[in-house]
Each structure stands twice: as structure tokens, then as C-alpha cells.
Image (cartoon, rainbow, N blue to C red; front, side):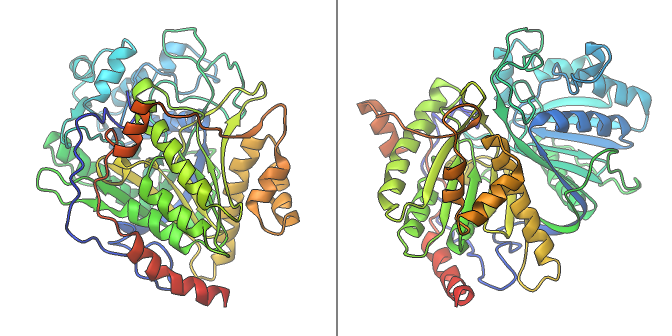
Length: 512
């Protein structure tokens, strides 16, 4: 099963309505109405790398909720444990039980879970009762429901939890099985298994973000919009809850502007929204030195062609991309891995200055870590964390939600934000390379600012590290799938030329 949906049956119809192009102003890449939906202030902003800490904090936040909790997800499994490292009975730690305890403890609290309808099929494969049956067994104030409001072959792929409209989690981590892991990515972690099973699962890398204040209310607006679209029920905003930042969570930044970017397919009278794709293209067009990407797939031809074009420039940026070794299922592999083989060939032929790398993280025993994170760091100025993948469907067929921070030219706090972007990049690379983040920063400085050369210098032949991806060949059927994009068709108009032209002059002014 493809993580975003079974793409067989999708069409390749591309909307002809012109899309806006980011305006090349000194204010940056994030332009409301173009590369993002809204920019709102986050009182506090945090990042969770891998799901263990995220799930533990989520449990505490749900149990402290006062009015409403909304889960908006691709998949959901109420049987998972949220904090298996903590003492106490396993039953009381299971997600479904935590939700029941929360509504039982506070008669004012309502909890809603909205899951993509075909996600139920995935759940049935794990022997989980369908959400619609679970809904009949729970209190009225705890509602499980499915969202069927999407195009044929499309998916609701957002991973959002909103608490009292004052706290919002958004990123790449589904609240479901197979996601729990720690940054150590041990080869055999005794807690890394599915509910009601002792079979250990493989290492899994993921990232999500947490915001409070107006930025949380904006994501709450998006979540309530999705709830109404999927259920027909209108929910009013929560307005009478005080600040609700969870205890023990150290903010990564405070009082920072956060942008929310979306993908929403053309369906049921709704117009296409592809802010995420435009942000991808703007980021590649505007990049000066380095683009660091963690993504589940490298299967979007439009982005790959943009990368290839920048690699051909004499003074173009470097690209460091992290992927899983292979997709998680047979169909997913046929749709995404085959496209990756073709696009990697395109990119590597364009890389005449040796500025592109695609790596797979491995454990101490050289076991591949599955990269599910969706993270982008552009130079020292943009950090994007979200649900969208580097494939065609995330740009125009599935619903997606990404959040970004940016160090803007002229902002007195720009040095602080630039340091934060680099700190996150080095933290992630340090995790994968098995070194301290400072060692990554030192290597970049030692290599004259080149991230490619720095990572190359830190690679190890044994133990935890990154290894270059060596794609396999394609058989005739796989070549046909890659050439036709049959399982992952494009759904948006191509705006790369216009975006690149808009940002080229600004790059020249910056370098001059």
C-alpha cells in the first residue's frame, strides 16, 4: 500500500488555471497566498526528532486538554503505547485508553479523530477494528470518523493534532503503529514493536513540530476546516483556554513567525491549492549555497529537473538528500523507487560540479533506517517541516500541511533564526552520522562552507553513518512505469520557469 494512497486509478489531468508565482522581494520565500497560506506568530516553537518524545508529550498534552482535541491523520491506531519507557501498566498507556481517560476526567472535553477512509484498509491489515466500529464503543464526546472527501486515488495525508486551539503539532509523524523510535535508532529496540506483537520492527526516522499562540490557532482553523469537510459538522474556535505549553518541553524558538503551507486537490468545487509545490520551487530557485532535504521519496520530476538545472550552474547550490533505501511496500516501490532511479540519473548527469549527494542512514550494524521525515533546510534561512513528500501526489492530489520558519533580510533577529536553521540541520546530520552536531558544524567550516564535502569527510565504513544510495536497474515494466508516471501522475501546472526567473535577479544582487 502506498503511504499516500493506492495511486492506481489516478488521472493525469492537470489544471489549466494559472497559479501565482512567489514575488521576489527582500522579505523572503514565504509569501501568503503564494508559497504559504498564512504567517502567524508562534509564542513558542519546538521540534521533535523521532516519535518517542513526541508521543510522550502528546499524551501529557491530551490529558491536560480542557475543551477540544482534534486528530487529523492519514492513519491512526488507538492500540499503540504513547510512552512505553515510563513506568505503569501498559493498558493505561495505550492511545485509545488515554483518550477515554481524558474525556472521563473532564465533562467539557471533546475529542475528534478524523482518518483518511482508505487508511482503514491499512489498519485492517494490522488486525485493528475499523474506526467506524470503534466509534460505536466510545463515549459521545470521543468521536472516531473517516474522511471520504477526496479525489479518486487521493489521500488525506496531513498529520496534525490541535489541542484547545492553543497548541498544535504538525509534521510527518502519524499517530499510529511502526512510528515509535528514538534518535539512537538501535538495531533491536525492545519497545519498537506493533501492538499485541513481540516482533521487533525496523528503525524509523521522523520529525514533527509544535507551536503555540496564533500559529496554533491558524493550524486549528485548518483542522476545523478539514473536520467540517469530512463530517459536515461545523466547529467553533476554542477561545477560553489559557496558554497550554506542555511542561518539560524546551522551546527551540520563541516569538517566531511560522508559515503554514498547504496542498489541497481540486475536488468537490474546491480549487487546487499547491502552495507547497510553489515553496519547493521557490526554495530551489533562491538557494545560494546548500539545500538539505530529508524525504521519504525522490520521485517528483519537476523538482528533480529544477535541481538538475541549478546543479548545472557554475556557482549553483549543493544538495544533500536523505532517503530510505527502498519503499515500504511492493506497490509503493513500483511507483516511487522506479521514478527515483530515472530522476537520479537525470540529476547525476547534470551534476558536473559534484554538488549532489543522496544518502541512506544506517544503524550501528549497517541496517537501513527508514526515512519518513519531511524536512528541508535552505541555506541558513529556511526550515520547513511537514507532511508532504517529494512525489507528484503531495504537490496536487493529497491534502498536506507544512510549517516553516525563515530568517528574513533586515529582521533584527535574523542571526538568531539563521543559527537555529543551521542548528537543526546539524542536529539531524549528527544523528545520522553518529557524531555530535558541533562536529558537523566544525566539518562544514573546515571544508570552506561546503556541506557536501563536510558530510563526505564524516562518513564511516563501519557503524552508524550515511551510505550513498546505489539504485538498482529497471526491468521493462519498471521502466514503463517510470517513463509514464502511471502510478504517480502530475496534477499541477508547471511554474518552474516563472519561479526561477523571479528569483534569479535576487540571487545575483545578494552575491554582488
